[in-house]
Image 1 (cartoon, rainbow, N blue to C red):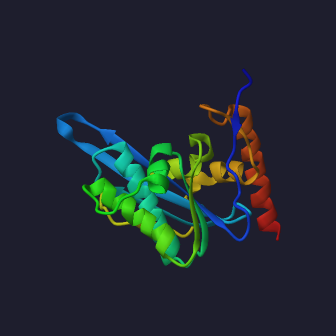
Image 2 (cartoon, one colour; image 1 turned 135 degrees about the vertical axis):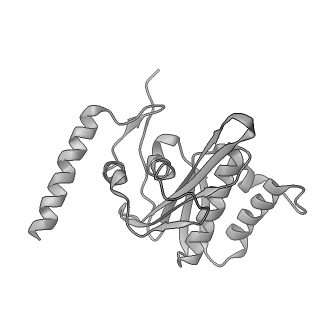
Length: 204
């Protein structure tokens, strides 16, 4: 069987794309730690805004769901009116798009209903869709970016340096195999390209 290769896909204009992800880790004595993040880029792959935060959640599903909800809030509050929200949690995307809820019976259903309200009730073009993990590396990396121990949402007007190579790989459409990652040759290529970009900016 031929391997499947994946890359981040730029959104069609006039859409922006906001990738979301969450990290959920469970420890002893029923303790857990969750964080969420989102990375928003335009049709050229240029950074527009990002966000990250610690959150309270009881499961990976809930953390991924909260990440989508916060992405929708951030997109609307920042004035985006044509946006694609991507998550690598297929189950979260499926339930937001397909589950019919009239009276939420629990916290998860309440969040799902809130997400559906953002998509349907507001005056904008908003799409929620699934992407493979390999097309979501930037948001995944941002969940691991240390901000603070507080639960306050941190907004990134500029990307952290640790995301530079991933963002560059996405911008040029660099592919990775399904269930894989960037290899050493690709990383070396990206480092060369990064230096070229830096020199070009310095000269201009």
